[in-house]
Amino acid sequence: MWQLISLGKWLLVVITVLLLAQLIIFGFFLLTLSNDKNVGDVKTSYPLVSAVEEALEPYVNITTTGIAGSTYTTYLNGTVFWIGSPEDSVKSIENVHLLMYTRLDSTETSGDLTIKHIGIHIEAYTSGSQLPTDAIDHVEVVIPLLGFDNPRYEFSLSCSTKI
Image 1 (cartoon, rainbow, N blue to C red):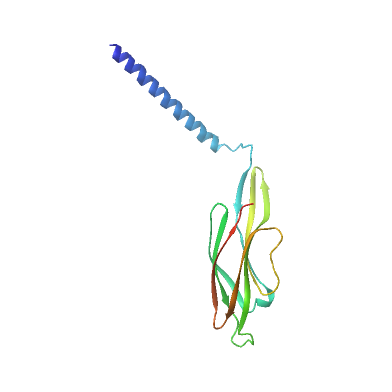
Image 2: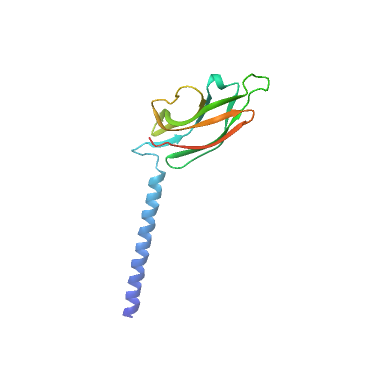
């Protein structure tokens, strides 16, 4: 008889603990669904901006084939193409610089939501550095020769997006 009473008390304790655990988990679930937050949410978008120096526009085009990211890094894959016409006097260009950089392009706030637009920029040029002073990170490669004999240059670059 005493064993049944102590078994009943033990079951009552176990059931009570399980119910309390479920209530705590449900409370945390409701807390995460709440729209009334003291600290604003931050959402980050990564627009891609591609540019070719004006002197290169008749001859060079950049296409991107993939963009991926991890917590603080963005990876960009693509190809630089020679698009010059066979009738042009320019048949190739040496030392085309390909620059990828990230920077905070803009910030929007709407209520408790802040959206940071971290731009991923990819540029091709032949003269002068194009890196802005507010860049978060950058990587630059030099394409030794781009032209009819070498019509494409494939790239895979990465930059930090950590602000």
